[in-house]
Length: 241
Ligand SMILES: [Zn+2]
Image (cartoon, rainbow, N blue to C red):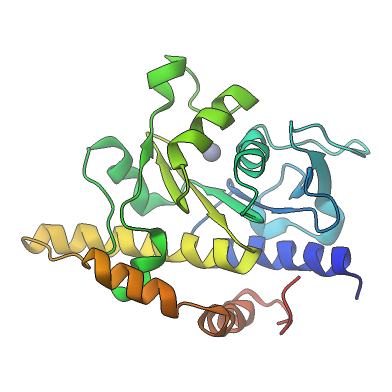
């Protein structure tokens, strides 16, 4: 299969997995940088992730302009993706979601930190971007490049950022890694809340986070991916798109 076709299949699978694993519901999206043109990215038309098919995947320039829309509507918040690809040449995939368990951490000042080994991929600490700081009262959606760039700045060099009163954004070196981090960001948030309800929490140390990160390679991520493909009813491709 051609590289582009394979990546489009991978994006469809990523959408279905994120839906199956409870990271996205009717909203939320995942993109990939175009494999032949780093100034473009691939993202579905505006549709619920669990409904997305190959024909829904569109190509955009980094400023969010669709190349060949053919009547297909674009996600209002596509600027999150373009702004991150613009700021971060190292990332090849972006997930944006309204994952439920992370929301309380975006509004209370209580930071999400890795609480178990599978959560180490979220990074040492997850920054919170508050749209109100620079943009005042908005509908909270990232609906232009100025907001997208501000969010990208807050995320910095990390893989994750929460968005106050809204959700989270995750960046990865490829689609599978971005999905992997998104799933475990949600799980970590859920477990952290449970642990905090029980008493004082001993989080992973900075050294432990680094050691787990060193060990989290394609082997572990592909193992999870195969399992998630099965659960989402999608074919497993051993090679990444
Ligand atoms: Zn959103």
